[in-house]
Image (tube, rainbow, N blue to C red; front, side, top):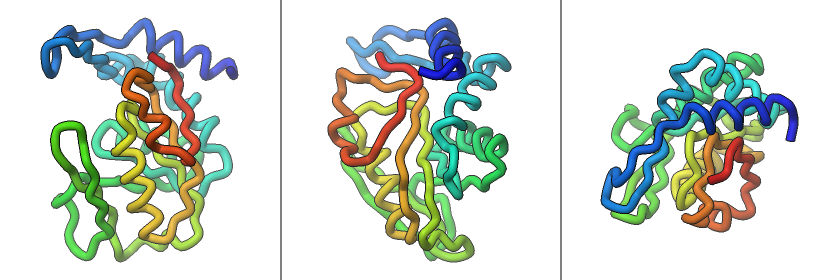
Length: 178
């Protein structure tokens, strides 16, 4: 693990707020808000994610914390950032992928006009890898638009939910694994 990834992991561990029984009884929610609100935490996470993004043409940040992280990484890398939005937030035409969640379904969208994704290498950035459905859907919607998704990077991976298996063969880098 590189020095910036070690520093990021240390700050993530120290700054993450744990909320018992949220959103339902028995769940220990990991709130990354304090990590992103801390200047050292945000800088360390941005630096570590930027290492993973080396060589890509575009960063795709997933709604909503992925927007924050993706924009910071894109700025550092000198690339653009594309917001992968929840359904119904963009004007048509859009590329859309619907996917299942453990409690229902959701939709992700990107613009179908105005951004040429054909052949561009894209890294997907999100805050948490849980069951993997969101990362899979993000990769699928980007590929619908013509992008070549090179991998994904997340701040926190919850291994008990086995999301890494669900996203294969997509390569995922996690800054911290819980």
